[in-house]
Image (cartoon, rainbow, N blue to C red; front, side, top):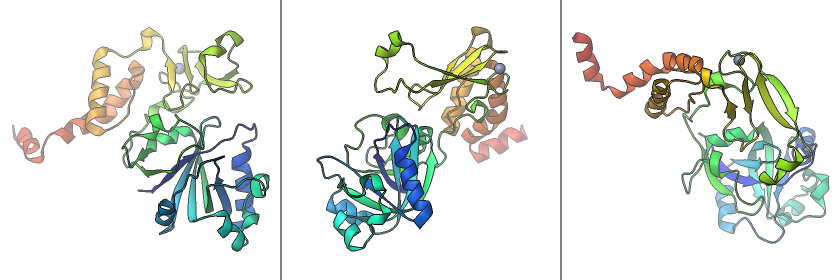
Length: 282
Ligand SMILES: [Zn+2]
């Protein structure tokens, strides 16, 4: 299980500037420095820096606008003075190499790229809260790194409900790009209206799905005729409860598949060993 620290970063460029500039240096030098910037505050205390420098760790950096979660392997945390005295400034991307003084400079040798959906796999060590809900809120760049850990056996998104796959016929859905109409824009905060939103559509089942709401949970529009029965819904919730899964009851067909796959295992889990044997004897 990976432990580490979580920060947010600012970037609303069209070309994923922050990510790409760091990646370029990493590819050229096998290392890169990531600066956590704040205009006024010192975001990293001396104690936290010392704690971080005991051994390598992961820094999870999130940008909601770009739907980006970066998992970066940090070898060492440095101050600007340490960066300079070790002649490492060339590892800082050019666009802030000379200008901005950051709260912390993380020396990194590996960057993995994920979507914000993966925030569900992170939990704040201090509060125990899942970052799938809390990670996206709050100020960008404004807070000290949060101590986080990756959750084992996380609530898996239902494998039948992959993005762009219809939850009724399980065929690939049609991807549609669209813009939010002018009159509806007041309803949305912090959104970039110059970039299109994405919808998926199954013409056969008349199901629409989009991923734009909060990224943490996909949104589905499903006709009543395809919706699961009450019994299916409660069975799915029972399975979730027993097995700590995150299955979503969306359609009859998908419930049948999921219940078939998990119900026996789920029920077996609740019966202690000796009772199971005695049931068999009867
Ligand atoms: Zn379909």
